[in-house]
Length: 65
Image (tube, rainbow, N blue to C red; front, side, top):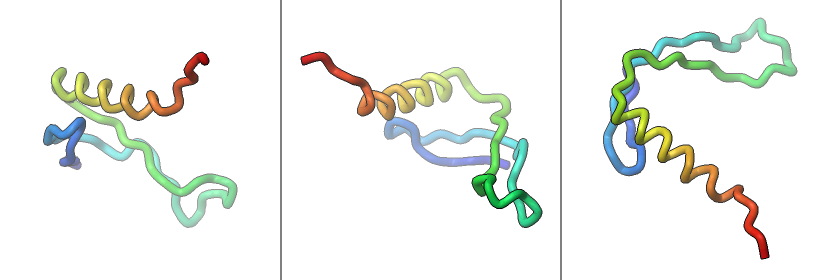
């Protein structure tokens, strides 16, 4: 599967495969969803992903008074 989107305002394309997914026979306590395994990701895309995660986590950082 090919995913297309944007990271930090830059368009990116990433190849991925479904590593796992929940379904109708999954236990009720298990959240619905799926896990992706990204394949052959370019270094520039990894840098953008790292930056995007850093920006997203910044809002949870505790600041001293």
